[in-house]
Image (cartoon, rainbow, N blue to C red; front, side):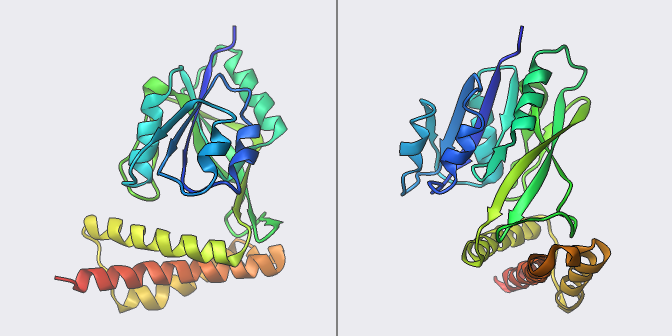
Length: 250
């Protein structure tokens, strides 16, 4: 007998991505969506796939995902972002796991990301294993506002099917997300007591560019590989510049 699966997802103004993601998991026994009061058609689209939709004032990714996890009903849970899609091989692989007596409490999925229309194979972006499938009673999300972690108590295995991540279709989307993420990241670093100085601003960005573009063979991904390494270094520069500004405030 197949174990039942709950899929949990958090959303905010995801009308462009949501249907594509939900189509790939509509076979699940339950879909739980926690929405941060979207202003577009997100909830209208979500209602076509599930009645388990909850409104939650935004306090960060970690708290929102933990809230969604607590609403899940079944033993096994899959955490999916609204810009991600389970490939058909991965769907079959997960269904196979649920039909067998498994020795693991969690599974890492192999994620491949699409940046500016290209599937990135280098630069440290692939293979990108993320812990997403797990037993509910063995897992929880950390409370970080950004870059939250899923903590699973027990052994974790790996699945081979691809988790397709449609991360940044254009630079406008990337830069908007960069601004939001760098602000949250700087705030998290400040809470941890970390500081930024001129050395961070001078050396961290070019070091990341060299790592991604040269050492991790990002140049093999063409123009997108160059832009990804360049903007990733700008991401680091912006994060530490914001941290530097935060630490100077009274």
